[in-house]
Length: 324
Image (cartoon, rainbow, N blue to C red; front, side):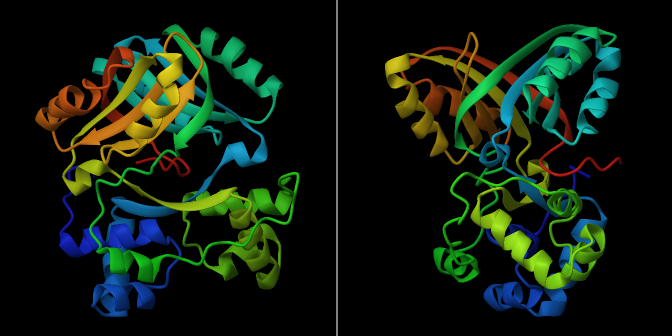
């Protein structure tokens, strides 16, 4: 699926959905200058082939969850099965097999210290064929995962036409607590962020007006955001990598802010551990990745060490795990 190359209209559709994942096909068609039928047909083709889907992504920070970045060293014969097992967990995202098939990288959002200890101190260290575990807390994100802008194709005017109205401030001063109905809504949206209100009502056990109110509430609170789950290779960008950097503490924030402005970057966060900054980057090919390292990263003198690892295979991104 990752070898499929999208044409220009497909790319514009993907960018439109990144701006507003639940925008109507008629609205997108009006902005792109094509018919509603054409937009619907293109989306359904890409969705059914597994190239693209809209997902409802949960921001665990807004819920008080603990976010961790994890690296596992394992034997090459076990990487795929371990990565798949991690991807099946609802609290695990951005699961990649890296470094020649001997390393797995992922992010987890853990609700309690008990969940953290069970995963990091018991399950992972005892997993057969895992040779080492490195887990570090993410202290502050400068970009949320999946914000890579390499697929942008629309003009500023088209972006403004599609941009949804800014949500009103959340009325809950102390954050949001998810109820059972919220959990069911988020589970359905993690599979398909464009699930209709009728289907969401059936999944949650709520009436449609209540579903609409809950979705608005979760969006206002920053808990729910819609994003496009698409392989960068489908957009012609075939070099993905993770960067682990050590940055002088006095320059940590300026360096993180600089990286967050790079179009190659899709995620930047400050972490604990022997390195204090992690980034996910995507380039067109290895030559472009080399230039990025030399011309964009190499000139940042505050970075005292850098480790890179190419993404060999992506098992899961931001949405629910869908077996191939």
